[in-house]
Length: 192
Ligand SMILES: [Cu+2]
Image 1 (cartoon, rainbow, N blue to C red):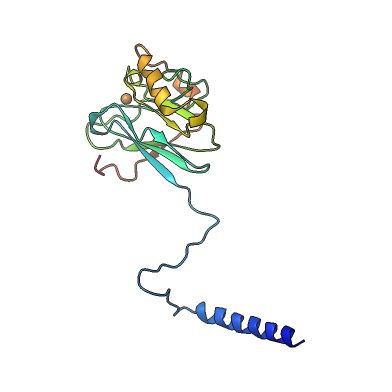
Image 2 (spheres, helix red, strand yellow):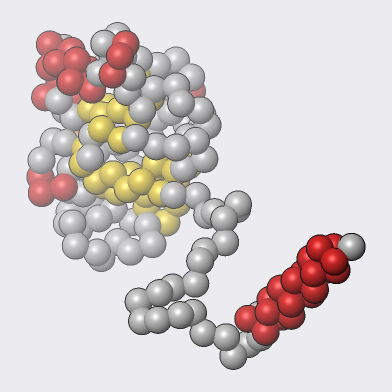
């Protein structure tokens, strides 16, 4: 009985303490300490990929690890590039039903006015390339969530793309764009 009473008292004290610390005047401890963040409904993480930065025929980064629910967002530099989904087996050929941004991101300098993005729905690897002329066969390709153990790695994918001859193969643009979306670039004047 004594123990039970003491426990109740402890609970009441704890409740009182909680009430005090929740008051608007509460501080968060010493310098450099921040209040803990709410977890649960975190905003989606956006992975930014630059296409053609500095005139290079590259996606930067070209190897992305992304959690389900996160967003991959492409920013396009000069002159005109695109991003198209392929299979691992055929890096420079559009995957039927795969996304295709189209050539809607031409710009002379800086970044294109719009960005292209899609959301990661599962951990299935996504392989992509630039659909412009022969950019793919120079290695302008990338991946999301490569599976290193499978042998289908980004390194193997790039090597395969470089063996490809000629221009990339695109399907009717309207057949693509399954998951992707075009949005205004939030900061087209940002350094690139
Ligand atoms: Cu390109």
